[in-house]
Image 1: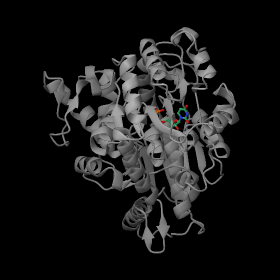
Image 2 (image 1 turned 90 degrees about the horizontal axis):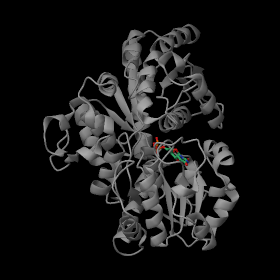
Image 3 (image 1 turned 180 degrees about the vertical axis):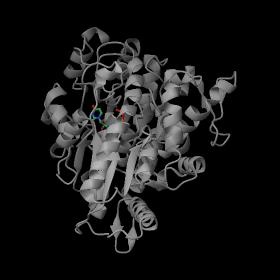
Image 4 (image 1 turned 135 degrees about the vertical axis):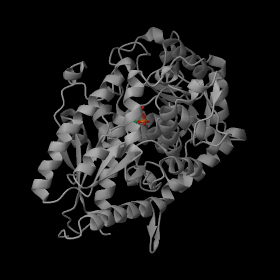
Amino acid sequence: MGSSQPHHDYIVMLPFMAHGHLIPFLALAKQIHQRTGFTLIIATTKRNVHYLRRSSSDSDIHFAELPFSSSDHGLPPDTETTENLPLSRVVDLFNASRSLEAPCRNFILESIGKHGRPPLCLVSDVFLGWAVDVARSFDTINVTFTTGGAYGSAAYASVWQNLPHRKTESDEFEAPGFPKRCRFHRTQLHLYLRAADGSDPWSRFFQPQISLSLKSHSWLCYTVEEIEPLGLEILRGLIKRPVWCVGPLLPPAALNDSSFSPSSSFSSISKQRVSKELGISAEKLFEWLDSQEPQSVLYISFGSQNTIGAARMMELAIGLEKSEKPFVWVIRPPFGFDLRGEFRPEWLPEGFEERAKAKNRGLLVRNWAPQLDILAHRSVGGFLSHCGWNSVMESLSQGVPIIGWPLAAEQAYNSKMLAEEKGVSVELTRGAQGAVVGDQVKQVIELVMDRDGEGGEMKKRANEVKLQIRAAMKEEGEHKGSALKAMDDFVASILSHREEKIPKIER
Ligand code: UDP
């Protein structure tokens, strides 16, 4: 399938409104467009369209604004993503996302008028299960795209659907679809899931939406076939439909050692945010990284919207300082404080930042850093991460082992898989208020950053995963990497569905 052929076929994509969902949707749209020449239209709310448009360096992807008013749903005005929304209000945004169904139907009607045919398919977020019915009513199909990995997505779906922790007194439980050896622990569940009983607002959103998504024609998963054999076996067993692994959804330059030049190739999103939020210039950050020993620096970040409790932040700083390892730490105010507010010095041990500067030990970066570029830098040797799936794929694509501190969503399942199945991560603690003391932090940092011993083994394993991730995107002669093959199979499948459904349509 060449990218040069002009195409009248189009696909409509419906992401959930959160940074960690919007960005992989945009990357997937680009990948499908480049591979097929189809027109790709991402339909979402106005502010998110604006954000994606600014983030999209080419004009090949189309956007459609779906009318949405956050205040109609009791949310602060102009709230169109989960970012900066207190956790207790996130469920309101989830519920509000259901109101996109009617505007989405209108948009598809208009599109049919314009293109003379329905879209080839709707690719919708796992949280927007209503899209299955929308697709059906327009005689097209719905394909669910999970922006999580296979293991994490399967665990998330299984636990929300079955609430297995409610059926036992024990802290440990089995999740339907998972082998017995993969026992889960109550502390791996998000606070709201731990308390869920099927009638609470979170269950009332997740259960029906996930269950609808389980009925879609097929799934696309942001992972690589070779790196998640167990997760994929479980996910395929649960949904009993094709699952195509289309990852890694990263810029090609980040998958190629020889051509990636971090200080010049920030993703455009990071570029915009860096200039606003970094607190030091990007040049200085990379100059500092350039001056460090290979694989010596620990990068610390909890993703686009999470943060840890104040007491935990203090212990993390104490342990980090004791470990004497160089670091780049993306800090934001602790849990319970305004994430957009000023960072107060009393949240860190007295003189922490000054000592780090004086000893040239590390950098504190405010709120946001160019993460992928940092992970790709040769001096970065470890990532203390909340195990959000984008962060996981970014880290592993660069062969960087992980120290897990999962906080929410399916992150604890990702952390479990990375430690138990892949041996590329050690979990430090769990949850924003997870028990942790400085000495433990020091010990785990030393273990993972050690170039010999267990740290060295983890690094080797992370490197093997990096090679598998990169191989998935390679095409040489007749040989296609697994992600490219999956993409072609997905396209062949939706085209053949259209042929069966509308045999007389002019193609
Ligand atoms: N990110 C970034 N700089 C930051 C924090 C996050 O570039 O300071 C990017 C990161 O590279 C990743 C995404 O934001 O692509 C975070 O997604 P993830 O799934 O890891 O976590 P989430 O933010 O959804 O919890």
